[in-house]
Image 1: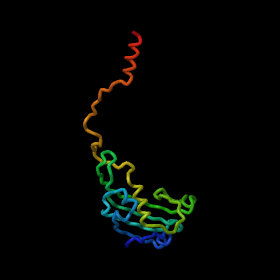
Image 2 (image 1 turned 180 degrees about the vertical axis):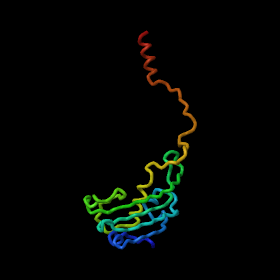
Image 3 (image 1 turned 30 degrees about the horizontal axis):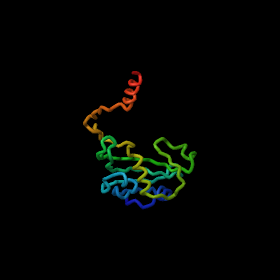
Image 4 (image 1 turned 120 degrees about the vertical axis):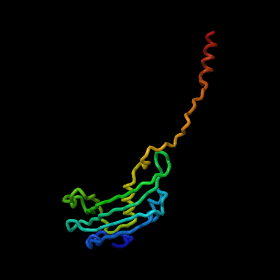
Length: 168
């Protein structure tokens, strides 16, 4: 196990059966850093590369981190522990994956090389709930005081009076 290179060389890493692990900081991931407040927390990453059926490069991995987001119910901070794991098979075409079992998530990808940071970012972002909320029943941001109804004048009251005076 060693630090993860800046770019993933998919076929090369898979053919060699390389295994990497690294501890990043949240601030190392620009697209994640922009939506969370805990940018100095750790992101633990483990990636294993291997070949399936001698011709399909695969990445098995897990990521562990905490993210501090705005609760969509009360707008206070909510801390979520994320632990996404994945088993990805990179296919040249859909037919190539027909023999794979269901434990694989397949990705159509011709790229031999891609950014490690962007790859990890994508895996983290799809694991964040669409509507992050506290697990307990938090108080919403609405005012706790009931709204007092104000007695408003009917704007047509003057017409009603004119109508009555015309009848008389």
